Amino acid sequence: MPAQDPYLNAAPAAAGPATRLFAVTPSDTAELPFVTTGLYVGSGGDVAVQDRLSGETVVFRNVGEGAGLPVRVARVLATGTTAGQIVGLA
Image (tube, rainbow, N blue to C red; front, side):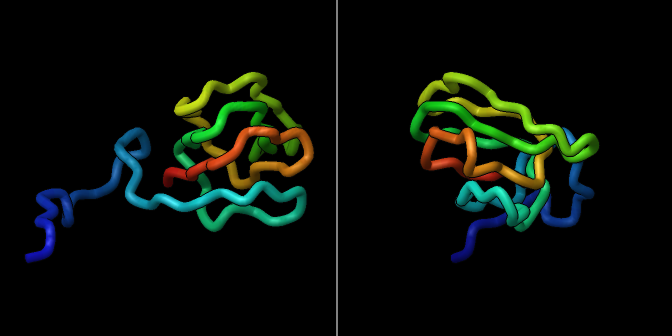
């Protein structure tokens, strides 16, 4: 029997839980398949992202293993990212 979803017909909230999860491959040229509501970092290190509005690069330094970053980004950059096993939440 498939899992029941009591929220199936509810409108998604911007600050609500993620409904899409995907592996992130950092790239300096390719955007993510979805703009995130957050990132999960499985293996700690630095995470370089591009600000969606300004285009500026921001580096989150020394992000701990298992940490979550509540950020809306369309690109996680390869240059400057040393963290691994990153999961996008959208």
